[in-house]
Length: 112
Image 1 (cartoon, rainbow, N blue to C red):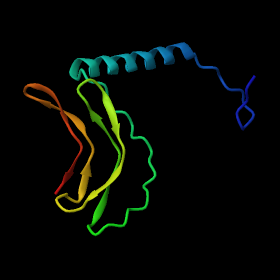
Image 2 (cartoon, one colour; image 1 turned 90 degrees about the vertical axis):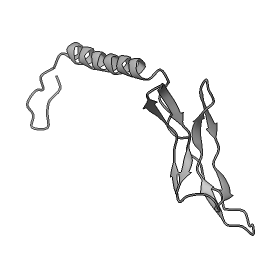
Image 3 (cartoon, rainbow, N blue to C red; image 1 turned 180 degrees about the horizontal axis):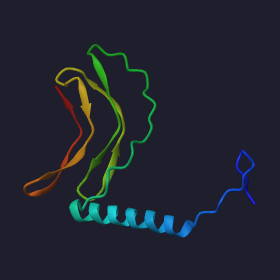
């Protein structure tokens, strides 16, 4: 028998009802996602180590690696240094947005 720190025995709670409830909630959430958005969720970013910037005459800024949609699935675009001119100062990762014509991929981009 398992005992708590104070020495009193612990009661065993039924595990099956809790697992059933979790499974139902997860299943409903998955069904809700599939009903509202036919596309898979964006995967978590792949960790990258930002290398030292190359020595160049023009100013560069780091564009982090990101997932992009190629029409049939997500593809990883590695991080890279890009010219700072012409870019905003805030990086926005890609996301799916619901429009009047259905779901549309908003690609990653720089915001000004």
